[in-house]
Length: 205
Image (cartoon, rainbow, N blue to C red; front, side, top):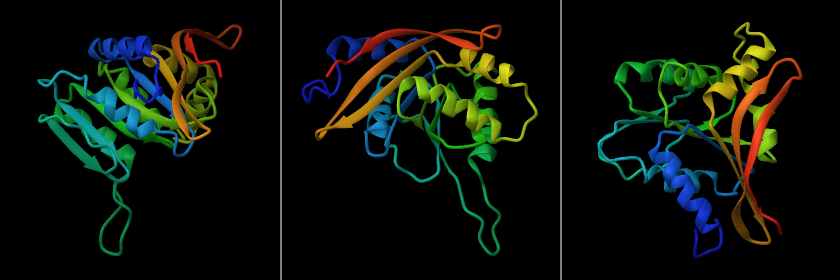
C-alpha cells in the first residue's frame, strides 16, 4: 500500500503501532474502496499468540493467523433457522477471544459490538459504509438505533466515544485507493452534543 501511495508511510507505522497496542479501530469508506483489504493488512500486526474471533456475513477476510476462530452468518432456510451477526457476537464472548473482528457493521449488531468492547475486549477491527470519517460516527449511531434496544441517544454516543479509539476513512478516486482521513476519538460532550475528534491525518488532493 505504501508503494502504491495508498497510505502515508508515517500513518502506516502509526496504525501498526496502534493495532499492537490494542486500540479499537473502525474503517469507513464506500463500496470498492478497499476497506476489507486495509483490515486484512492491519490484522497482520496482531501478535500471533492472541486468539482472534472473526465474524462475517460472507467469508471475505483472509487473516494469516493460526489462532483464529471464524464465524459466518447464515440466512434462514426451510429447515434451518437464521444465525445473525448479532447472534454470533453474543456467542463470541464464550470463546475467550483476545480480539474480535467484525467484517462490516450494517445494522443492529452495532449495539452488540459496543457491548463487547465495553466488557474489556480491546483491539477490535471493523468496517462501515460511510462518506467520511465524520459521517462514520453518525452512521454507526444509526445502526445502534436499529437494534431496537431502548437507550438514550446521548448514551449511545457516549458509549461510542468510550469504545472506539480511531476512525480511518479510505477513498477511491481516479483509480487510486488511499487512506484520506485518520481521526482520534477523544470524548463526547452531551451538553453540546458534540464529539471531540482530533484529526491525526488528512490527505490533500
